[in-house]
Length: 230
Length: 230
Image (spheres, rainbow over the protein chains, first blue to last red):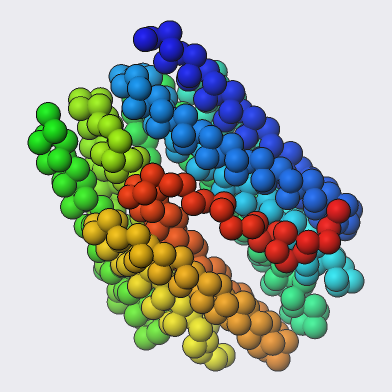
């Protein structure tokens, strides 16, 4: 029985790593399209989304099967629960990459570019690293690596705010280009969301390894920013 | 054994409905603040977020406990799996309401308003209804009601696009007010995300009742919008 569970869990890990690899490629391809201003990679992004969606359903079915057939306990049970959550995060990472490609292809590339925004490729790079490292942390059951992912999310948030301020001042100078500049904000939000999903994966890994739920263990952002609201 | 599982599942449902109720109140309060331009409700939003976060951890622990102790099967197992997913969606609904309140309190209310955007209160109303109905569908195991939630999401998407276009034309007329107008876009995205989470809940309910995974069963948006990309 134990051997069966182990085999199934290995299969599950393989599927999630494959999803993670596809999601990373999608971030990379969507950004390559964004930087080179070409829709040459769009279909590759959409094709990978189809594969991610199929894997998402497979992973959920495998998890249900393991739970129903083998009634796993303790660490194995935590692994299955973490796998279900990571599955859903990865599918959403893929969605964000699709959104970026859609914004580029259907809107942004129709306009003459006002200015490139250097924060966006940097945000994409960090987001891709975060997805990779969170999956590595899952695969190796490495809590330290998961903690590193959590730290990177702060850098991502700083870049997002910088990008927003830059876009606002660009719009003031070029109000007729508002549409394409707002698209840049939306793309930076897509990348920020990818960072958030990787952060969730890292938290799931910590729960899986240590059985410790660290979500919401930081003081909520609200009270940090404005402690005086009554 | 069966009786224990039923009791635990009822407890789980109660917790999720409580979370859903809090999330609905948070949408309502954040929107009341937005419309009346007051931070008088902000602390109530933040307090409810703390309660949602605590419940989220409790729900996950209860699910783990049921899986470990009672090894539920078939419909009960699907209910636990759906409960874990719904739990995560509701926590994210609450996050979006917090984001709205933060945008209003820390940015929007500092500016003299240019123009009200009627799509936003309407989007909030639909989003709140979607959360309520998706939870009702969960509680009553009502697939038809879940299907209604899926339909409402289209209306939400239409309003989001309308709001975006309206804001773009407002920015062109008032470029010095770009910051507050972009905040309106971000708020409309928060509301759209709430609709997406309710949609996910509705899909989870359909899976729970019918054992049928309807995710990704529609042709992907990418191929609908731009079938010609090769």
